[in-house]
Image 1: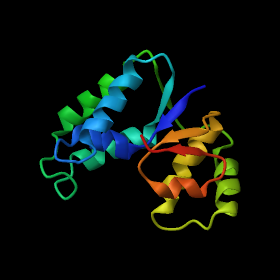
Image 2 (image 1 turned 90 degrees about the vertical axis):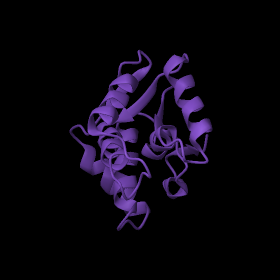
Image 3 (image 1 turned 90 degrees about the horizontal axis):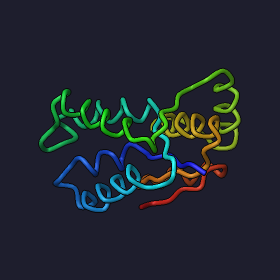
Length: 142
């Protein structure tokens, strides 16, 4: 069984000022070298690039080149599978959002949840408790 990883774990692993840095970096290292397939959505990866290079989010933002190198390192792991929307995505998104009132910041969470579910991924590692609203996902805070 594979699992998904949310952008906040990637950000904590890159932000040495974050109190969650050591745990997140260790978790990502174990994912990249472990025996279980992990999934990263293109949505997650591009949000990582956007947020890790943003000076209002990171005390010391990464350069675009460094952020892309981090993405390349993750996706080059033989245990990583990169996933995205496929035909039928909107139907899954609609089913999720029919169950959970969705607006504002919950929209991208529902988007990621739908991508994961479309690929048969039901386990998500994140520090974001909002994902617990989607009953189809098993949410774990590493």
